[in-house]
Image (tube, rainbow, N blue to C red; front, side, top):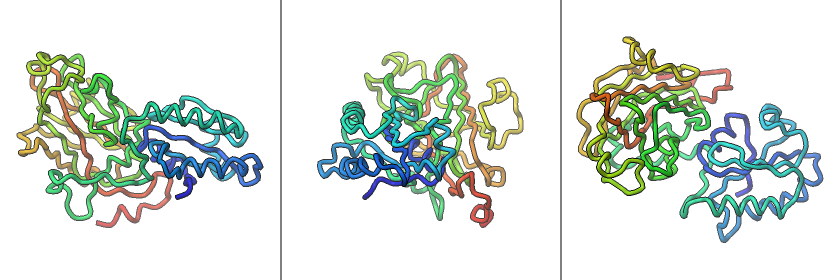
Amino acid sequence: MPIPYIKSKDDLDLYISQNDYVMINFTASWCGPCKAVAPILEQLYSDPEQRYNMIEMVKVDLDSQQEVSRRYEVSSVPTFVFVERGKETSRTVGGNVPEIKQKLDAFREKAPDGLKRKERGTPVKVADELKPYISGNYEILNSTVHTGGFEALNAMSLYASGDLRDTIKKSTEKTGIISDADAQLLLHVPLMNISKVYSILLKLKKPEYKPEYVLDEEDYAQETQSPSVVKVWANHTSLISFDDAASDANPGHIEKVGEPDENGWYECRLKFVRFQKTQSLTIFVDGEDEDLHTLIDDIVIVGLSGEAKDQPTLSALEED
């Protein structure tokens, strides 16, 4: 399979959101050095020994994708931008193959064993325990979250070495978000596509303690709790304040959290009419005891993914 060309800014964002390690190759049809290095890059991408299959590589045409070129301030080709967990870590200008390979090798050494690149739009596999909550044409929308724009206030990863975005990305089993200074959590979840959001699934079952957790065993056992209330808003462009979230008596959705199912999942079924053209979700969570940490082991967003935000029509979304 050849290295894919991105089709838009949102297309690139989706690749980045789904892969921890990405090399962006800015190229052009008229560029001689680009053509010279291309076969070598294709060999690395399709390496039969799969030495680089944890790294996604994409091409950006300098002329047709000017918005992306401006974003990364690229004016000459070839240019190679290396992105780790949504952030640029380095770049190489020119077809310096040894330097490019050195940077790919650095990514390879950092990547966890078993990690593999995900193609754009790769659907999240539905676990058996989630199937009762995902019926008809609904799907898990986590793969369409723009994790580069994801924000979380008063939040820590459950794992000391974890990343808060892991719970949304579904690229690792090390999920879990826990409140920090008090019981409240506030999340901003931007979506790549304008989507119909049907429900938010929260895994509330407290997992068995692991030494890698950010809390010690005693605090984990005695100082954590499940959420007692959840509020959700659609289409805020950025995070609202905790005061505004707590005081808003008429959000897009509000409910007191009840008991989870036997697998620990709790379904927040949203008021669908308010979430039919959703570009982002703001999620506020509070616990019963303000002095305890509120723990959510996993978050799954369920709905129908619509068209990319830069598309002019919403006909697919307006069909029930």
